[in-house]
Image (cartoon, one colour):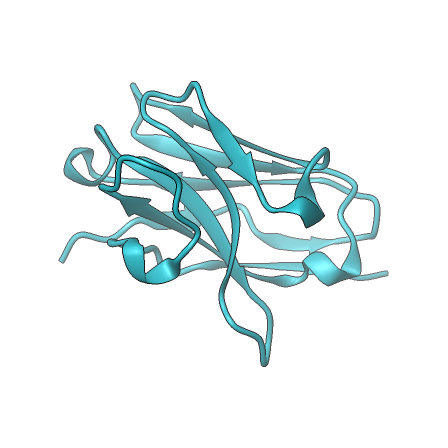
Length: 124
């Protein structure tokens, strides 16, 4: 089964930075929009950011605009999420996912495949 692989999560103090990475097989990356979602304990999975193919367009949920940056390296089949000025409310498991849809979608059910997630904890 095709699966994406996230890495780079960890524990960081408020105001700190992390860069999470997602590696994908070619079939799940080429010509696909890639996105990051997150899920905090007891909450639904929420959209964070999306990047188009090959990478000219990006979209962010309002709560991370100006702090997070999504990017992709198409030669490496990798997508990144640079997170700056992290806040305790950013604490969650972060997932990457791919979609074949040609336009922006923030609905998790429109994405497949997914990664296993990486934990990001923001705490002093």
